[in-house]
Length: 429
Image: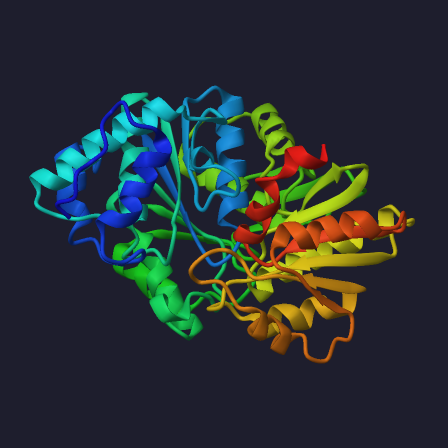
């Protein structure tokens, strides 16, 4: 806690490394340390409208769509997301543009001074989140769109009172931190709900009792999918319909998961923000998110990057993969570059992917929580088409060298799997 801080003239990477070592643990849920620092910085009561999104999957797509729609309407929009795929700046955007290094460094100086004045340490995620809020305030953003990092109730994002709360879905993930049942996890997600605000629940499941209880306690207004708003698949391959008691809209299909796009549209409608049909259309068409069924051409080959790391995320990946292969019939086989973190449900993810994968190329990630080759191999023990590599880059190079015209390369399992390749993209362009 008393280590020497970098200077304002130091690089962003120097500051990020510093925040990675100030606190004793990387994840330390709870707001006791964060709130005094946030109050010292003056970021706890923004004059902006705040839309906060929690959930097991879909947070990134929902926040991306929200920000794109609001930007199309002309609002000055701050968007905070995590984790990043390629560079830290992806986490903090204003009007769709990643903030510059110098703005982050200037904010980090102020955050560090505030936490020292309070005699407290902050985790990497806490410090960087507070820096994002400070930047949004300094840049006078009209709307803050905030993605919860982990859970909700005890996540640093929850120091900011939202005007609209969105919960995308509830699934089993991060059990060591937020619980091992749907109701326990729902209780944590429901922690973002505040008195008398609209709450959008977008999960394709029965509304958990914990969310119902929190809504009742707070006298909040719940808007649930398939009850208060509805969305219908595309009439063709270009449009879909959104419907509520107040309106019916015909909207473009977009590039992200439709249930998350619909959640964003529902949140816009209950937010009180003025948004035209034109802005909805433009925003949906422009909303793209790196690492979510991200189809690219690399060295002339078709590569799909997807960061899905739990069963729900992989089911979304497979649905989109099926649609792509139905549309582009030349593709009939998949080569999968695969690795995961050791504390994830590797067996369930592999079980889902097995039916689509012709050949697996696996390697350990170069991060502390990485699954080792023994874990990965154990999950794949019934597969006889598995190749092991020293690292993800080597696995990807092998796939590029052998992929045929009827094959797609799929890179999946973790944001870290994607990052290991994205760091080297220029070599293959």
